[in-house]
Image 1 (tube, rainbow, N blue to C red):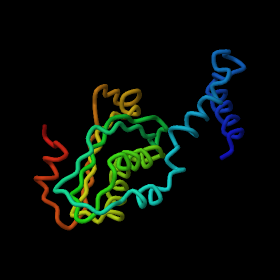
Image 2 (image 1 turned 135 degrees about the vertical axis):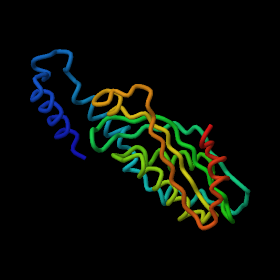
Image 3 (image 1 turned 180 degrees about the horizontal axis):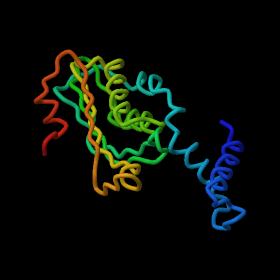
Image 4 (image 1 turned 90 degrees about the horizontal axis):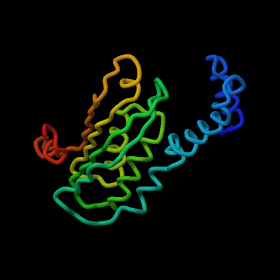
Length: 184
């Protein structure tokens, strides 16, 4: 990552829009803050090896159902570079393996803290759980408010986009929907 080049690019971007830091003193240091926000927070998921995160946290065990609810999520839209925020619910039906619930939260965050479409995040979370836990099924529901829908175009304040990713050979959809509170 080249922070200096990114800083110059943000300054140039603002100047090209007619609002450079030389013209508006309030913008002094903005480029550095924007670069830090993206590099250290909004895109921090690229530095996480999800396989290395999950592998040591898996242990033998069984349960009928594990649900991790109301996981706060922030992601960045790859089309507009604006944030989307909301919550995730992750559920899985273990067969022979469990994983720490904190690890589930870190997996969601690792995939969300990238330039990612909402649909991709859910699919990636489910695929990672399937790969490492081999559960009977796994699901991830995301409910996000997209800044690109709220601040521009539609200006759909209060609108949320909900997506659902499900995988597994033994999926009881009514149980999945109940676990994820679909329809309430």
